[in-house]
Length: 441
Image 1 (cartoon, rainbow, N blue to C red):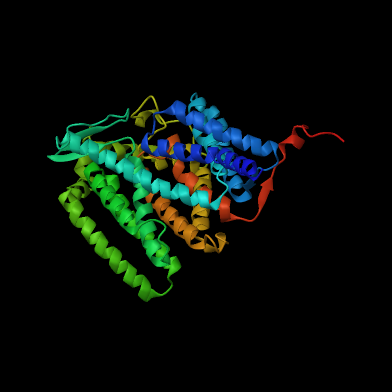
Image 2 (image 1 turned 180 degrees about the horizontal axis):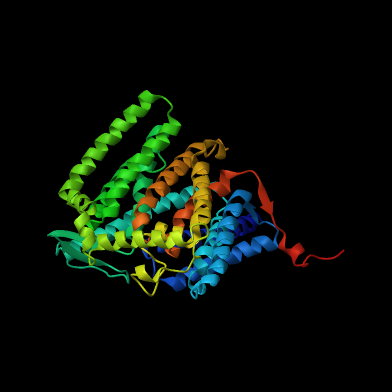
């Protein structure tokens, strides 16, 4: 009899972990294979939604009010802007509806499927392993192109390489994932030392950081150099919140300055200073075929576009026809944040910024992690994610990395924390009563 009961518990345990396994697989596919394997990702999403629906029917569904409010604000803002854009002839509402209306609700719902603190820790640890796998695959590709390794397996990713001024550069669809994980790993390592809580082997983290730094240098994009500076800057700021003592803060900054110096030496040999000279060279703006001048022209034209309707903008999905570089996706500007100003105006932009800063504040606020058992773990994760989000916004300013489904995982991570320990107030929903499915007495 006990054997039968134990077997039932074992089966029940595996059944309950199906959405967790699907969630973990989905995150891996979003990181490693963006823009492809769409059918597989859709199936995983449907399985997660199915289990969440069963929770609703059994009156076991609960969601953090704080994250639910954030999702509602962003979805309502997106819906209002899309309807507003109809006044100016927007014919692409269906193409951007999911991005600005459905995704905020979707990622909130997905993050809510992970309801155990230990599972959150497993997910974040797994993401570190995924990062190492991604970077090893990228290095494998580089060594293959350089004829160091003959064999290479091509996934259907957009992999390309070139020589610019005799310097090797390459790009992959999953390069943007590194722009979030690099500051995350650096911050995670520093805060692990501070809290003396080594959730992952320090050697593993250092090896991953080294390999990731190598791939970022080989990518050769200006965004990578900006990312290094922003990582050190925001990490110093978050340490200022932790350590009020100027002496301790100075010691940490000396370490970061030393690290900055080392990175600058590396980037010097990677032609970094030549890029800086080009960026500030006024003559380059006269060359309309150059990517720098294209971006500067686009930024200038988008600001002029915004000035015509400064408060509410032109509506999401509308675009300035004079600055389109990809007519198949006219809203996917390289200067994405500048486009947002013209699309949603000052009011919409302030709403987006307010929700983002509110998210950052909650990640940095130690009072949110009101549990003795996981206090150090979630403090480390929260602060590291905050630094990563703030640093990642820099590369996004000049590149359309953010408005994609496969980048939504970077917002799922903070919601995982807030759903667990962000608030004691939860909203319980009994769908059976709403749909009159309960038994009448």
